[in-house]
Structure formats: C-alpha cells, structure tokens
Image (tube, rainbow, N blue to C red; front, top):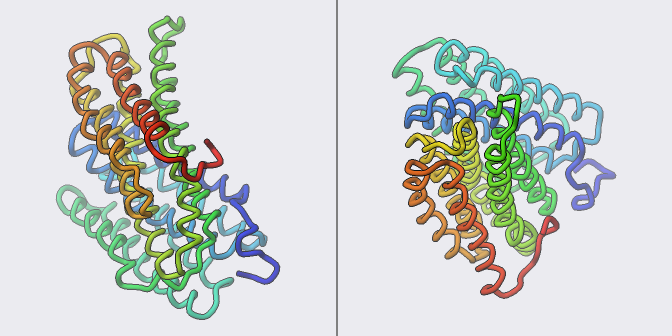
Length: 376
C-alpha cells in the first residue's frame, strides 16, 4: 500500500462501483447470447466468454484491493480499463463470428491497462508475483484476438485454450504474497452479486413491449422479484460477514488461496447461474402465462441449480458449513421444468421461489445464529 492509505479503513470506492456497473454490461450481453441461442452451444459460448472476462475482472479487483485507486493516475487507468470492457462487451453477441475482433481488441486493452497499472504502485515480492501475471494475461488476450479472425472449430479451440490458461495461471505463479484487505475484498464481490441480480430483473422489463400492461405481466414481474430476492437473501444472510471473519483469522498464504478459490473459481457457476436464470426470465416474460418452451424452463431451473451450487462451493471453501439446504435446492430445481413446460413460466417461478425461501427459512430456524451480513 502507498503511504497514507490504511490497509483496512479504505472500503470499496465509488470508482470501483462505477467499474463494476460497466463490467455488468458484459453479463447483460451474455444473457442476450443465451436468450437468442438457448442451446447447449449458446450456453457454452456464453460461459467460455464469461470465464475469460471474469478472470480479468478478478485481476482488477485484486489490484485495487492491494492499492486503493485514490490517485489520479490509478483512476484514469481504471477508466481506460472500463473502456476496454465496454468495447469487449459490444462484441459479445457475435463473439464467435463478426464481433470476435471487436471483443478481442477490447480484451487486449483490458489486459494492457491492467499490466500498466501493475508498473507503478506495487513493490518487491508483490510486484514480482503479480507481475508474472502480465505475460500470461497478454498471451491469453492474444489467443482471443486471433480467435476473432478464425471460424468454426479453430475458434472454439482458441477460446477453450485461453480459458484453461487463465485459470491455470495461479498454479504457475505465486499469489500468496498479496495481503488482502478482507472487508474490501468480500464487499467488492458482494456488490457484483447485487448488481448482477438487479440486472437480471431488467430482463423482465426488456421483454414486455406491449402498450397495455396486464395483470399477468405484473404478476410475472413480482414473481421474478420474489425469486431474485430469495437468491439475494440466501447469499447475504450468512455468507458475507462470515467470510470476512474467516479471512481475518487466516494467515496470508491461506487467505489468498481461499479468496482465489471462493471468489474466483466458485463464482463462475454462481454468476453463471444468474446469467442462465436471467435468460430464462427474458424468454419467459414474452408470454408468461403460456406453456414455456423446454429451453426456457430449463434455463430457469438450471440457473437456480448453478447459482446454489456455486454458493455451496463458496461456503465449502471458506468452511462456513450450511450446505444441506443449498444442495436440496440444486437437486429439486430441475423438477420444476415439467411445471414450466406443462403450465407456464409464471407457474414455474412459484416453486422455484418456494425452494429458495424454504432454504432461507431452514437456515434461519435450524442453524445456530452466526455472523450476519450488513445486507441482512
């Protein structure tokens, strides 16, 4: 840390929140991909793109955790990084086609700015550890840019290699020398969950294009809000402050690996589940009272399953316990696919919401009181 900046007193800054709001546009675009192409191929493309972009979001989150962006230089570089993410997001809808070069250029900007940010404020072993990420990140960005000029199987191979290279990087470098600010780190990732959940609700409004809103559309919007609220509650009622407590009682090396596993790897299915669920909401909101297409009902159910399994992975890595209710929701959510296809998306949201609220109620009644989150 630079002199004059307290290690724990600096919370998430407004420019970091601004950065997160821009990054979430990538989630909106990925939701669009799955909405338009609700096949296994569409979901796989979306998750490959998200996995690479999420890695670099984590790179910025770790860097601003190590050095609070309070100087003009750091803020200007963050703004440049936002521009890179914005350009990359614009290319997402056709990333495996004509938009691949746009995404690749934006992603290269994101990586170059991140590398430039590493050059100034970090010193000693921290600089050496995080500095090793620069060449690996640039190599991956180059693969994605090259993929923009290819087609077919070659594009898929380059994206898969880039994904694997990114998420293997921690085992080739040494992230354990970075002394994380626990509260800032947990709060930063909690904010991205809140923003992503809020963004999923926009899918309902985007799909309603008729001039006169009926009681069915209102009911569908409220049902979607109830499910998203239950997802929010399940995350923040027990995970947030409990995670801070775990980090503050862990030594530096263990803390870094826990942070990487819980808020890096485990967040892939957690946020990926939000993307899938939002795509299901967007498709289902077109005709919420009519029987849903199989793809729509599957997106709604698998989104909840992926989200709860991701949250279970976060809790398991931090040794927070309370996994039984999450596994129950993950196993039972796919059963609601039958309700969606035989009745309607609106009818399917009811049991999904009941499962999530039931998990919250179970934890509230049957688990001893632990640390509560600020949001709870």
